Image 1 (tube, helix red, strand yellow):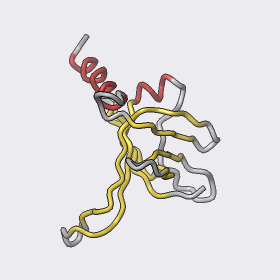
Image 2 (cartoon, one colour):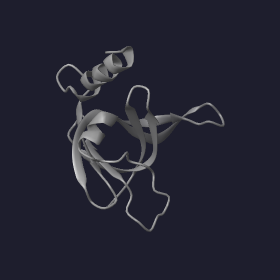
Image 3 (cartoon, helix red, strand yellow):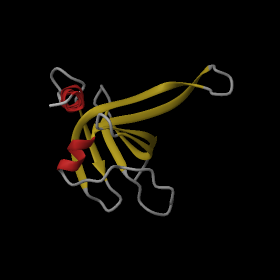
Length: 127
């Protein structure tokens, strides 16, 4: 087993293990309605840096990180941002640390094909 395969296996422990890793329940739904549950990393932060001024401002940025091999194992394509606002987007749901549920749409996805990590940048969404 090469170093990349070892790193991808370690990624599974880091992202999907909810005892010793960061594993957190995340649901992903494709535009046709297929829903799958995964363990991954999620964040939802209320302060961002204004790129024009470099100052910290109030805002919201959320993302999830998922293992690409887990998506492949259930036959799900990688979530992507859907520019067409008349159709259904890819959606992601997870609870915050206090148990409050949140729903987001995928704005952009960034696959790292070297280690097998998919990071999705999210926007708040009401369905």
